[in-house]
Structures are given as structure tokens and as C-alpha cells.
Amino acid sequence: MKILTLLGSARKKGNTAAVLTAFEKLVSPHAEIERINLAEVNIYPCKGCDACQKVQDQPGCRQKDDALRIFECMRSADLVLYATPLYVWDCSAQMKVLWDRQYSLVKYNAGTATQSLIKGKQTALLVTCGGPLEDNADVIQVIFRREMEYSFCQVAGIYIVADCTTPRELGGRAEWTAGQMLHELLGKQDSMTVYTENSR
Ligand SMILES: Cc1cc2nc3c(=O)[nH]c(=O)nc-3n(C[C@H](O)[C@H](O)[C@H](O)COP(=O)(O)O)c2cc1C
Image 1 (cartoon, rainbow, N blue to C red):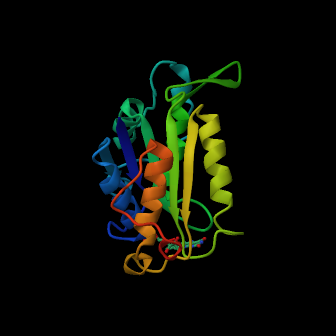
Image 2: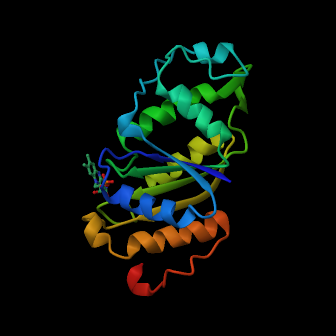
């Protein structure tokens, strides 16, 4: 099994990276992982030129940047995990620019989206945020589900880690969330982690 993880935070040692790294460590005996830090790649914003809609079997985007390489990685992965901090109730700009460019993977026929180059792909979302879940990390879940439905992908799980301060203060919550993800996304149990209410 191949998992592509996409880190949407500019902080390589921030909260999102801490939970994502915990997941990658747990999952590494079971799957091949490729991580891409979106803050370190070059992805231009979508120009809305619709050149991508003139070809059916490839992205067809005129902008020859790292998005094209990421699309190839997505297409060969069994699971794509998007990890982002919550920024103004939405994903980070680094993630948003990628989601916009994924428009080139969805193909229209007579004005209707009928095909996707990542059709049937399993996807998941990991979000860390400073505030609570309610009235805060709700909108991003709707956006993600809608984006994945639009791309003909399957949502295998959404994981929100609320009330984050620093990676250090996350404590066992990073491992707890990683264990949940391992269980739900891969059907595996981490025997080394003791899950308690306190580590939630
Ligand atoms: C520009 C900006 C916008 C933010 N917006 C929100 C928000 O709308 N809701 C929230 O709960 N936290 C918000 N936060 C806090 C971050 O989501 C939180 O600190 C997150 O865990 C940071 O992840 P990182 O350490 O991986 O960058 C914001 C932080 C920044 C810098």
C-alpha cells in the first residue's frame, strides 16, 4: 500500500507536522509513505484558463510546476492524506492552491463534470486548530467532502485535533490521533500505544 501525505503547514515542526509524523511512524511498517511539504514546492495558482478541459486523459495544465509531479504521486498512491492547519476556518494557502489546481484532474463533458483522473481514490483530511471543533472546524469538513465528491474520490476519514497550542503541549494527543487514523484508515491496531481518555 502506498500513502501520499501532503503537509500544508509552513511549520515543519508545528502541530500539524507533529500529528502527521506520529501517523507516518505508526503506519510505516504497513505501508510505503511519501511525504510532500507543500511549503517547499512551487505551485502557481490556477489561472482559470480552462486549457485543462481541452484534454481528457491528462491534467493538461499550461503551468509546468510541481503540481504536475504531485498529481502523478496522487495517481499512483492508494491513499492521499491532506494535512493542514486551520487558517481562518479553512485550509492553509499552501493547501488551497493545490485544491484549486486539482480542477485540472476533473474533466467536463457538455458542461458537467463526468470524469476524474483520480476517480475512486481514497483520501483523508487531518486538521489541527487553535480553537474548538464546534463553529470553527466545521466549514473545512464541508469544503473537503465537497471537493472530494467533485473529484470522484472517497473520503476515508476526517481527523480534527482541536485546542492546539504547541506541539509539546499536544502530548499524547498526537499519538492518540495517529492510532485512530491507523485503525480507521488501514484497519490496523498499534499495540505499543496505550489509549486513555487523557491522551485524547
Ligand atoms: C493565519 C492563521 C489563521 C488561523 N485561523 C484559525 C482559525 O480560524 N481557527 C482556529 O481554531 N485556529 C486558527 N489558527 C491557529 C492554527 O490553526 C493552529 O495554531 C494550528 O495548530 C497551527 O498548525 P501548525 O503548527 O501546523 O502550523 C490560525 C493560525 C494562523 C497563523
